[in-house]
Each structure stands twice: as C-alpha cells, then as structure tokens.
Image (cartoon, rainbow over all chains, first blue to last red):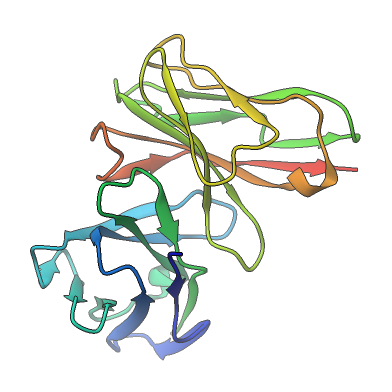
Length: 112
Length: 114
C-alpha cells in the first residue's frame, strides 16, 4: 500500500536560516503533492502544491522540489521566521485516486 | 467569507451515544471532505463529496455516515460512538472537484468518547 514517511520528526533552526523538510513516498503513480502547515490547535493550512509533471515550484519564501526518480518531496523555507514554527506535513494523491495519503508531520521550531 | 466552519469545537460522548458534527462552507466549493487526526498518525480521509447529493467513502469510513443535501453543508454522523473514535475531526473544502487542489480546512472538533 501507500506509505508516506518523514526523515525528521523535529527540525530546529535559527531565525533567518533556510529550512528543508523532507518527505518520501512509495507509490510511483502519485500525481499530485501538497505541503500543509498546521499550527497548534488549528486546522491545516495549504502552503504549496506540485503536480507530477513538474520538478520544482516556487511560492513566497517556499519552494517545493519533486524527485520522482527516488520518490522524494521536499519543502524549502527561505529566511525562516518564528511565525513559521508549526508542524509541516506532506500529502499526496495516487494516480486516479481521490483519497490522499498524509505524512505524520515534522515539527519545525524556529529560535529567535 | 467565513470559510469553513465547524461545530462544536469540543464534545465528550459516552460509548453508544450518537451525534452529528456540523460543517459548512460559504465559498461555493463542490468538494468537501472529513478527516480525522490521531496522535502520531497522518490525517485520514473518512468520507468525501464531489457535489450535492454525491458522497463516497474514504480510507476509514466505518462508524460514520455523511450526507450532502446542499453545496454548503456536509454533516458527519456518528451513529454509536466508540472510544476508538476519540480524535480531532477536520472538515475541508476545495474548489477543485476532485479534491486535487488547495483544500481549506475548518478549525476542527475535538471529540472524546468515554
């Protein structure tokens, strides 16, 4: 079955550093990928998405990279700020499926 | 716009009781969904709907019922609550009818079943 994993459960960085959060997946037919941010006590918030026909997509201070060869997804946050402290998790859809698979999440802690 | 709203925010039930978790959105989204979030696990899809009158099962549908009589509302019913249904429940909606697009999540309902 589908599996989505995260390499690090907690990531601590200094304010101003760049952060990289990783996600591995197993289903090579996955065609749509999303990164969410979840602050304590709140619902997940969409950050950025990417489709399988792309390798890279940029937003405001965030970049998502997709390596289909090794089935790896990453979220890069530039100039990390204390307000970026949250749990980040990836989600993906298998080709033809309406049911997403979510990762367990990485807790990002930004120290001022 | 209020976005996605959920009620109640907190609920405690006894085993065997029934209840309905309410979800509403004012963005005219066709796609709506219910997830549960448990510690140490990723979000799991319970049920989803691609439009009024259409619902389908997600990854963990057992013990839950849904209906979609209007575009705005998507209630989740627990017919006979069990301790295994203790969780945080999130409702979400998307303007992409397949759900493969930005999903807007509600603030969640924290449910405890004793």
